[in-house]
Image (cartoon, rainbow, N blue to C red; front, side, top):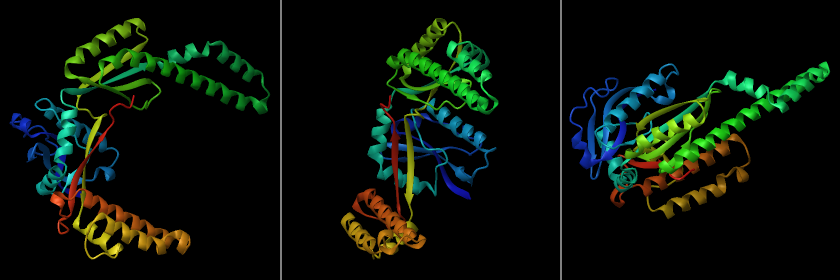
Length: 344
């Protein structure tokens, strides 16, 4: 499906937006960047026409992701930003402004919480054939291989599987050991630490660090010391400084007028009232449409799912309505911020 509208890259404090003077060449894949300021917050957007990220062909996704990240990191050089979730497209400037207006305080508080910080990612890799050769010489592995070679033909396959499992467990233990060493060395330098997935056999550890901007050189010094202590057995790679991708992500949501109208119809309501009215309508209809009452056929389950969706849609719209009104004709836009401070 093709989307048209404002592609939203990041949000920042409004007083810093004047420092971004010429952004015409920042995002050649998207077009010139402009700002949508509301209150204390500004969004950086670009006109976009293209596929939704979820429907984008796999071979096109890496280039799109790199272009998205390039924009945010270029903006970051002139103003601290919080990244918006990849692929966020709202219909126009007014819908972006509505989201900023509704959630201005939340966004400003989140921007302040990460002020003066950057993300640095540290990855460690090893020479896997060399490590496997060392594991193969360990007594318990050698004993398991010897037992497998002497087992009968009917049980040999199972014995070899056990050898593989033993080797895999040993590699996992070595990864955990190095991970602990890295965390012990780097955690004191960071405000927060988060482990990223290990996505290949060659990757031993992948750590995201939220640090003060002034601490980047200390990270480098610690990695050099660690490399020397481990006698160069691992390759360390530092990426950054980056925006706090792993620690904060702004999500912009829209509940359109059509969504509100449909939710009202499902709950048999003439208009959006207070949350209690929505809950009462949901409970009344749920008593007759719940699968436990109507039976477990697919139709009753679908009807109940519609009730749950309608209730959640209206309650969310009421929660985020601007100025205690619910503009049913245009819907509601709002922001949430996924934060992961203090996970480790």
